[in-house]
Image (cartoon, rainbow, N blue to C red):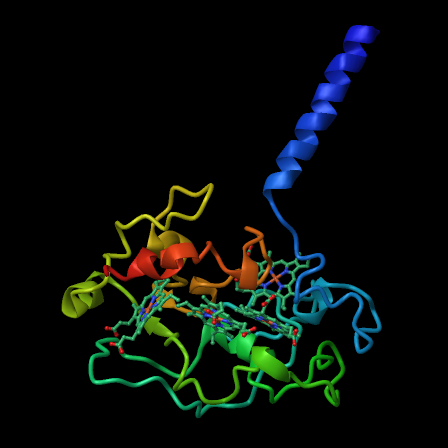
Length: 210
Ligand code: HEC
Ligand code: HEC
Ligand code: HEC
Ligand code: HEC
């Protein structure tokens, strides 16, 4: 019996040690459970629904939040850019459905007349001209033309616990998106909901050969 208790204690201890590695959304900026405008008190429902999901955005994961109607964002441009930067698509369009400030937080499910819009430093707005570009293809050809980028197909992402490459861990359908740098669900527990720490610019140096 003593021995059983010992093993049981060890098992429970291991279980908790395991849980300690993966962080959750609870308590992050995306935990909306305590917001006055979220009557349900649920976290996921503000963005996802198991039924009757919005399908107008390609690859939207069972999406429940009203999608931004903006189609003419000002885009980043420079004489040294080699990428063909398009209007935000896929998951970046979902981020901007709160972060461009045009759609209210509580506009999910059947609600479409909310009054709580994004303000403050998290407001990205409808001009992306001063933001790192997203929604363009990042492949070996771009890396060669640019000269200062790693080949995403072979260069490791360096994300703790993953042996994957930039392409497998950071690009979505071969494209650079907001989610190439951010983890909306805070899986890694890194500040600013980043995919990996940017200490000593580690995040930037994952792709940029500088
Ligand atoms: C603030 C909005 C937001 C909230 C809240 C949110 N998600 Fe997501 N979720 C997204 C976005 C955007 C994507 C697509 C981009 C990505 O995967 O990073 C996504 C993708 C997913 C996916 C598919 C891809 C993957 O990561 O496996 C699953 C499953 C998922 N979410 C589950 C959940 C669950 C469960 C909750 C609640 C605990 C939740 N999400 C809360 C925005 C959200
Ligand atoms: C349902 C609305 C909603 C969606 C969709 C959404 N966000 Fe947010 N996000 C918020 C709110 C609200 C905050 C907190 C703003 C504040 O504190 O003023 C926030 C904060 C953040 C922050 C700052 C985190 C911090 O702690 O400093 C980042 C980064 C972020 N979001 C990235 C994303 C990305 C990337 C996506 C898409 C993959 C996304 N968000 C989708 C509503 C949303
Ligand atoms: C190339 C990487 C990268 C991309 C792409 C990216 N971000 Fe960020 N973002 C960061 C970093 C790093 C920070 C941490 C704070 C900083 O350095 O400004 C950040 C901070 C933020 C914040 C918090 C701002 C604050 O001052 O509190 C929000 C909100 C945010 N990002 C949203 C987005 C959205 C939405 C997109 C897509 C349109 C996006 N990010 C694309 C790297 C990126
Ligand atoms: C997931 C890969 C990835 C990450 C992470 C990343 N970038 Fe980029 N970045 C790119 C790609 C690809 C381009 C497009 C380059 C081009 O068009 O020649 C780019 C473009 C840029 C540009 C514009 C270059 C120009 O010619 O105008 C700057 C500056 C930049 N990134 C800085 C950063 C910084 C700073 C960080 C960290 C906060 C960062 N990047 C993180 C992939 C990344």
